[in-house]
Amino acid sequence: MTRSITILGATGSIGVSTLDVLAQMEAKDEFEVAALTGAGNIALLAEQAVRHQAKLAVTADESRYLNLKDALAGTGVAVAAGESGLIEAADMPASMVMAAIVGTAGLAPTLAAARRGADIALANKECLVSAGELFVGAVKTGGGRLLPVDSEHSAIFQSLDPERRHAVERVILTASGGPFRTWSREQMAGVSADVARAHPNWSMGLKISIGSASMFNKALEVIEAKHLFDLEPHEIEVIVHPQSIIHSMVGYRDGSIIAQLGAPDMRTAIGYALTFPDRPALNVERLDFAKLARLDFEAPDEVRFPALRLARLALTRGGVQALTMNAAEETAFHAFCDGRIGFLDMADIAESAMEAMVDWPAANTIEDVFAADSEARRRAAEFIARKAF
Ligand code: NAD
Ligand code: MG
Image (cartoon, protein in one colour):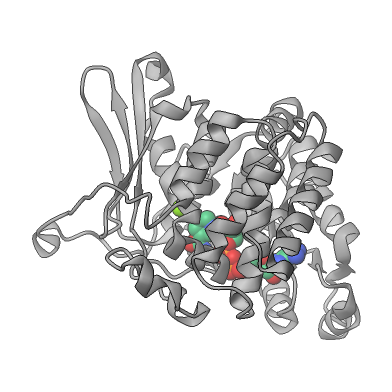
């Protein structure tokens, strides 16, 4: 049976790995590519669209529409741009949509795909952090499946036996600890984005690499886990595991721990989401335990890495606190990359925005989500401009 796939964010780290997995699959003809989307990298997007015979290519950046049109002239690939173009891509009748846009920009098109019943391979954790119940509800109503791509959540998905859901006691998310795992706050205070983006184990996009250094990525993942697996906050633990070999674990009530292990390569998790419940043959590194020799663990330090404390606070408070944390942190991330604030300021800005919006009403509709998201960004930008956070 031929299946079709649309990749939202095809030109990014996850998008490129997804196309590589598709190219590696034994029965390559099993999948045909419906739409591919990108933003600034027009040459790569056009090249991908031709190579994978996509029906539609979309740039999120409207000002590059003509560049993309020129690049694809005579190829038969249709071209669109902007937010409406992203929705057009999501609405193409593909049975699966890989959600790999970075940030809240991914929410609207992924939601559109969920509503029409596509299976969602979800890399964009921001969909769940910003719109948790609404997003999960849209997938359920649409009738498609929600397949985690984030490596930790894929590991939990692979280790969590749905028949034994009642016997699950906890999930344990592993965190590499990032490049600053052993650094003091004084050392972290002065780092630039170039230093913070150098992840010890994984090769990823800029936002998630910086988020790994600050552990904001893990904070988002705690909230992502809650929504994906319907967990209470106390059932989600985080353990620092510098080698990133155990991708996460599920603890059962008989004391057993079931874990998924592998080399730190996103293609395994992507392949699992694309072919679930099968496993594709993949040319990824095999673990050599004798060479590994040891696996290390340590408790996360919420003083040096306040993001984890903020995630717990967001879960306890509920309402739009998680959304606010994410929106304010995304705003602060851009300011950090531009050199306008320091590395440690990102968490302070997120916390200040959460405090400022503590009485904001819960979001019951997607319009409420976007309104609260804009307000959180506005407040964060104001804190940054006034240097008050
Ligand atoms: P990336 O920055 O490498 O790629 C992002 C993609 O989104 C690109 O195709 C880019 O063109 C597109 N994009 C950027 N801004 C956009 C906008 N405003 N509108 C529409 N499209 C836009 O990011 P990535 O590392 O591939 O991460 C993508 C998502 O997957 C993120 O949510 C991230 O948290 C998640 N994720 C990534 C990894 C990883 O290993 N890279 C692992 C787990 C989860
Ligand atoms: Mg992850």
